[in-house]
Amino acid sequence: MTTTEVDGFVAAIPSADRPSCTTRLHFELETTAGGGGVQFVSPVLQNLYPALLSWKAEYGHPNIPLGNSEGRQCSTLRRLHIQKKLTEEEVLWLDELGFMFHSLEDVYHDVDFDTLFGRLMEYEARNPDSKFQVPKKCAEDPELGAWVTGLRRLGPAKVDPAHAEKLDSVGFVWVSKRKCGSKFMLQYKELTRKAEDLAADGLSEEQVVRALLEVPKTGDLIKAQKQIEAKGKMSDTRKDYMTQLFGQAWTSLV
Image (tube, rainbow, N blue to C red; front, side, top):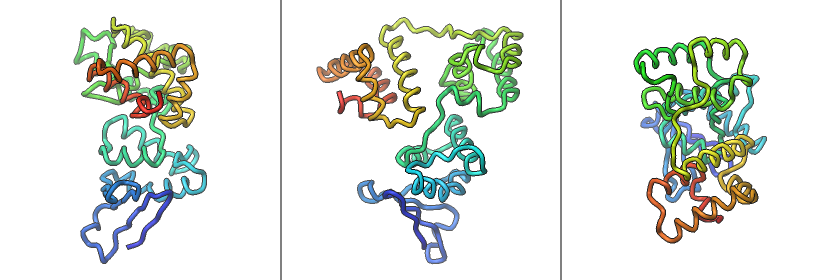
């Protein structure tokens, strides 16, 4: 068996002496307690992992840009993530390696418009009362939900004029009517937008929190949520929202 190591990430490549690993690549992250292993199921990730490790070794991150086959496979991984076709272990491994997943606006640029438009119309046919209010976390088609949310964030002025015209022709609603009356949720949406913008620039969860704490109103909001959490008065739902956005960094840095 041969291995490749980059910053503690060990890729163990199956060989004749490990017949049990002939159908899947086995990876171990040495920084994990006990050296727990991760088995990759995705053929794309199985094929791409050497390039990810090599790129990280040379440039300090695994985010290969477009321009070659490896960059295109990175885009494919991001789509698979949106489509929920990567396992939790695969997502965790990529996240720990420093791989950047999609911001919602990127979905529009990286997928075929006509394909997603067709799926949008199929969704409308199945849900005639929807009025194009596809939820961001659409259980039946996660990529469609992300695409619609990304379209609305970009707005008609920032998408291809031909695409905007086609959407307008079917009565697409550019502003979501899925408004939440909760003050927290309205503030949370703004936090999410700012955090995603920072993450798109390559900042880690910890760096995102530190940057947001420097913004007066945003920092005050995060600190207020931490105070509620410290007093044991934060609901599990709200705690989950904050953790989904910032990981555990928001409690340890505030």
